[in-house]
Amino acid sequence: MSAIDLERLTAYHEAGHAVIALSQGRMLQEVSIVPKLRRLGHCEVKKGTAKKLKDTLETDLLILLAGMAAEARLTGRYHLSGAAQDLEMARRLAEMRAPNPRQGERLLERTLAKVEHLLEDAGTWAAVEAVAEELCKSRKISGRAARHFYELAIARR
Image (cartoon, rainbow, N blue to C red; front, side, top):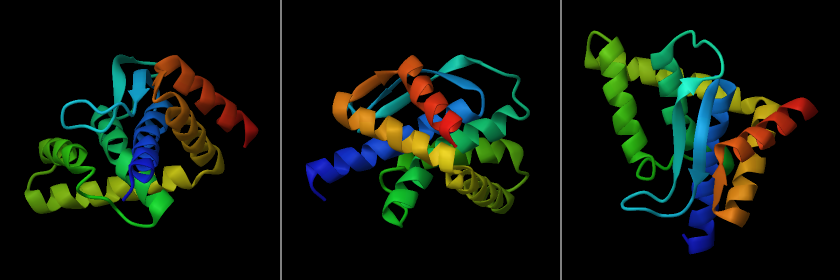
């Protein structure tokens, strides 16, 4: 995979995290595709929320799985190695909710299906595309900018 393809893939991955976080009422600090340590990018979610969350653990799982799901929607396949840190964190969270590893995996499967369903919404996917496009241009955007792109895309649907 060329550097440009990897950068675009990373932009969609991080945009997926960002848009699902915003859709679930979470606030963002910044979204970046600037490589740092072992990461090709990051989406920094703020501690607070814009609205009351129904289920904080499920929200966190949705956000963690959204990067991989956005990549898969773009390319048609999962990039498990690129999402390894997200998947490890998601597994740990699932273990907190599920009574055994098998049920933890089932929880992850259900949550991944839910995030894929969320990304099928035309406005939500348009927001992912807009944030990813801006990341490819600027390499880093503020949480405020990501929210702006999200709100524009949602308003157009």
